[in-house]
Length: 180
Image (tube, rainbow, N blue to C red; front, side, top):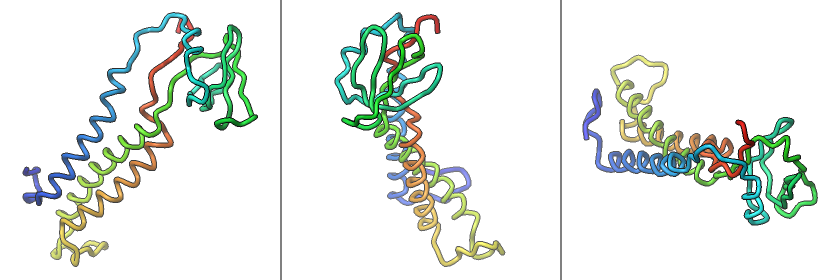
């Protein structure tokens, strides 16, 4: 594998780049497939959820990530923590959407995307910084492969740290208020 402007990468770096791309693709593919068509009034589908299912509820007044407790014709109730006494009560008329959360999938995809980006940036820095440059960052004692690896590791950590908490691959919509 030869990237423009980069020397031939060692086999282990090729493997890391391919694996990072694959992890990112695996994380994005289910989201593309799970895009639901416009939902009719599907409020009663919420009753099929298992108590403790993690949800993201978006309403006119507030949005919360919580654990499903119960639902009836007028309200959706979920708790702040699994099995906790603190509950959020959402009136059906105020709920815009209810979606499943996918923190694990978002973390894994973030790890892959971050590692791929970090490897690319690390490879670019490793190529640009050589013993001949008078850069303020003197990495001349490190080989290009080491700099690329460091970039990949930093990207991996940053991608996981950003991907998980943001839940950027939030799950399918279980309920959408009619007319939206």
